Picture (tube, rainbow, N blue to C red):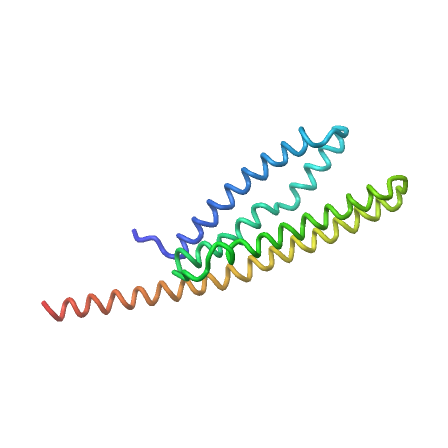
Length: 170
C-alpha cells in the first residue's frame, strides 16, 4: 500500500518528538542529579514542573512542520533557519520566563514574599508561552494537513491523466 503524504508527515513528527522526549529525559536527569544540590522534595517538585511543560517535544513538533514543508511539499526555499526559528523563539521565551525569576530572586535573596511572587509570575508567563506554542503548532499542523491533502489529490489526478494517455497510445 502506498503511504499518504499526511502519513509521511505524521511519521516525521512522531520521530522528531520521540527524539526530543529522549533528550528532555536526559536533560532533566542531568539537571536534577548534577546541577541541583537541593533537597529531594525540591528535586521532585522541579521534575514535576518540568514534566508539565514538555517544551522540547513541542519545539520538535513545530520544527517537523518545517521539515515536512521542505521535504514533502518540496518548498526548497523553506530551509533550516525557517524551520527552527519558531521553535527557538518558543524555547527561548519559555527559558527566559523561568530564568528571569531566578535572577530576580538572586538579587533579592532575603525577601520570601518576593520570591513567591516571582515564582508565580514566572509560572504564569511560561504557561502562556507554552500554550501559545501549542496553539501555533495546531494552527500550522491543520494548514499543513490541508496542503498535503491537496497535493495528494493533484498527484492522483496527474497520475490518472498519465494512465489515460498511456491507454490511448495502446
